[in-house]
Amino acid sequence: MNTLSIINSASIIIPTYNEEKYLPALLQSLKDQTIKPKEVIVVDAYSKDNTAEIVKRYGYKLVLSKKKGPAAQRNYGAQIATGKFLFFLMQMFSCHKKHF
Image (cartoon, rainbow, N blue to C red):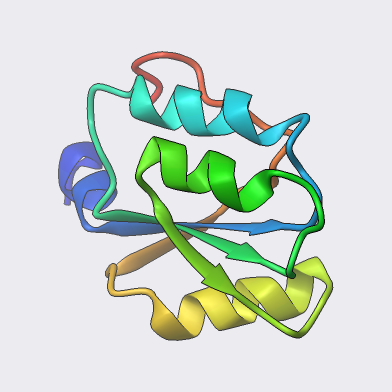
C-alpha cells in the first residue's frame, strides 16, 4: 500500500477545548495538503471560545464530547471515524505543505 492510498483512506482526529489560538494554523495546513484524507474530525469538549466556529469555517466535521481530556476525545473520534487508518493530531501542530 502506498502513501497516497493510506492518506486517502485515513481519518484525522483532533481533540480540542478552547483552541481558537492554535487551531486555524492546523486546519489551514490540512487544507493545503495535495493529498487529502478521507475525513477530518474535530472532537470538541464544549469550548467556550470560537473553536466550533473555526471548525465550521474550514468545513470539517465537528462533534461534541461531554468527556473532557484528549484521550477520551481521541477514543470518541475513533469510534465514529470511517477511515481505514486513524491519525491523531494535536491542535498546536501543523503539517508542512505537500507533507502527505
